[in-house]
Amino acid sequence: MKGRIIRGVGGFYYVYTDEGIYECRARGSFRKEGIKPLVGDDVEISVTSQTDMEGSLDEICERRSVLIRPAVANVDQALVFFACASPEPNLNLLDHFLAYMQQQKLETILCFNKTDLADEAVVRHLREVYAGSGCPILSVSLLRGEGLEELDRYLDGRTTVVAGPSGAGKSSLTNYLQPQAAMEVGEVSRKIGRGRQTTRHTQLVRIRKDTYFLDTPGFSSLELDMPPGELPECYPEFRPYIPKCYFDDCLHHREPDCAVKQAVERGEINRERYGNYLLLLEELSSRRRY
Ligand code: ZN
Image (cartoon, rainbow, N blue to C red; front, side, top):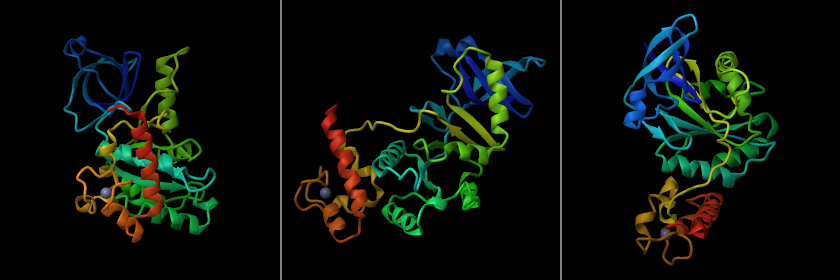
């Protein structure tokens, strides 16, 4: 039977199939071959007990993609989810997420929630700052149910990892996307049993056929890990200017004849985005890991 791993806890894998969720053990051969099944894996299982919904994980289908943090397979895109007010968005943190997704080469949708609590000017400003980021920018109010059809269109038929700070409304998003999610999570938790930590695990939530999102409890902050010289490539609005800088290894900071800085001066690159770039650059340089 075909299915998809939606959660892995303590050597058990919970596999979503057309017949329901099965609790599976991986075959020993995976361990021998050094393969670890991941949440998001499309798998082949055989049922060992239909009454207890138990099975054995026999085969992992070829992965389309693998993310390391969080460890998950077959993610198509990221949804970076922030509130536009209450709490006010931390744009430095937001840039961390966007740069990380760029580094992972993941298509990213930027979504601002709580438009009901923000002035229109605030939303417009956020759209301006990120207009060059290469991401579609959505603004929604989960409270009022505004902008959600467009969000649905972006999620349809894909597997989306959701990242964002606490307070942005991620749990309202979960509730909106899949009213049944709570039920399925409960079903999995019951199988896992009492006394085991169940809340801190990455879980894939099925919205409908072929449409999933990944709820990662820990994905509210992250530390970038890359040489400072790779950061400029994570800013899509810099790319047309980078080849015109005088120095090939220009970091677009203190170097003379920098086309990126000139573009900022001319207003072609958003000044706040550039400011956040400098903060990230400083953070990466001060770590001197490379
Ligand atoms: Zn430069």
